[in-house]
Length: 170
Image: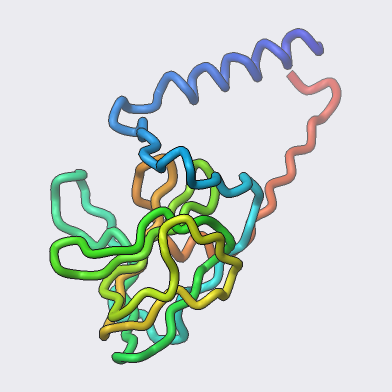
């Protein structure tokens, strides 16, 4: 029985890892001098206290349009905070707009866009709720796990999965 369970577990893991598409692989481009965040289970909080004006809408294909994050109806001057502890890996301009990116674990990164001013710099270690910037208007909050966009709202809840093995069931 134990060897059958072990073989089944191995087969399930083999299928799970071999079925990952090639584009699911992400390359870590974080400079070596920036410490990695500890890989721990954390529940995130929304980065602002504002209504959602455009929820996550994943595209049918990676190259199609959609909303790869959550848009919040923030007002100019609203405070933006870190959704969870982590390390700031980028705080700067992209295409004329200011963004702040935080690596929470080796696999999870969040980014806040359309920031008027950042209160953190690359390499800063932040705790959940630490102010990271001020909104220029509505902000865009994204989350990527292993390089793939996920619904950031899924980070705001803790799920607990319990597996119970039943003896004698094959």
